[in-house]
Length: 290
Image 1 (cartoon, helix red, strand yellow):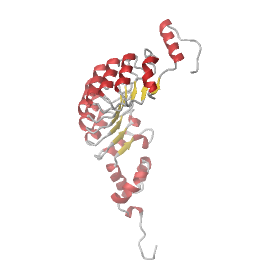
Image 2 (spheres, rainbow, N blue to C red; image 1 turned 135 degrees about the vertical axis):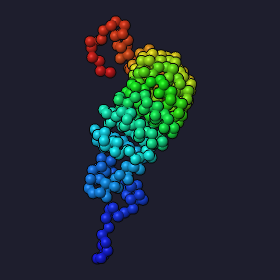
Image 3 (tube, rainbow, N blue to C red; image 1 turned 60 degrees about the horizontal axis):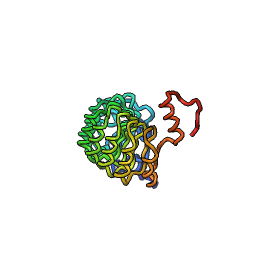
Image 4 (cartoon, rainbow, N blue to C red; image 1 turned 60 degrees about the vertical axis):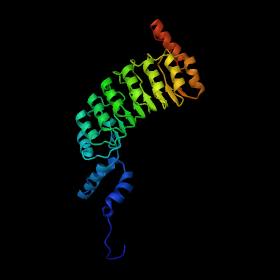
């Protein structure tokens, strides 16, 4: 620098035009939170950043984000488009989540995997506040019931991806209602739900022509007829998981296989061993690696 000219500092750059979009947006959130302890000016800068960030992923903060940190970070943010809070699953309740959802009406993607302390009110709040929701993951959220799912189906017609893995309260009627109203679905998981059967799968096939990925792993009531219906009504299907659906035979999968659909199913020998166990009531004593 020329003598007499003031030395430029990082914080002298325009915050909203330069620092936020072109510098801070490339730094991990965990580092930004550390940076705010440098000075009052840096604290103000980071607060401005978190107030305007479009994506919040709790895993970027660390393996265990404190409740107070979560609430402080998001209390003034009204522009979120993506929210992932798996790392908050141990303590996250409706009290912490509902204010965030209620003030962020532009959310398009929400991941609540394993957040077992939430209630059905969380899903109702999401459905009422987030009409543009495209992706929602509720895996292992057993509090999801038919009434809250119906609210989601009534208000979130733009849904393209929904993960209901191990949402064991749900039965065929709730899934049918969802399929009839969310016919833009491209990816759906109903895995690990013994209550889901052919009625739900056939309705999904007929109502959701854009379907590309369907996970029916462990859906023991799903049988051959619904798989054939999928083959008939879902020309865009690319992947189907039917592992542990023991009543599905190869002939019902043959059309999908011939179309190049990726199938996740037990190898024939493994399936035979499982059926043998079911019939005779004991586990084969030979550990086969298949």
